[in-house]
Length: 74
Image (cartoon, rainbow, N blue to C red; front, top):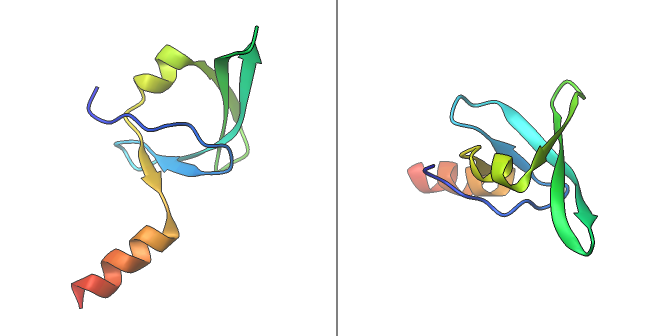
């Protein structure tokens, strides 16, 4: 595991192969996080437990961050 991101509903993440996923919801069982609902760019939903999330090696995908990097490269 190289990267570990906090799951934030509504935020997009990319994996090491560049695929985008969005955190749609965080599910709780007995008051504790148990699963994360993910959606890919095609609308397919998937559910992962916390261990699965931690093993995904995701990078936060944010257009604002990308714009800042592009502006800095000029």
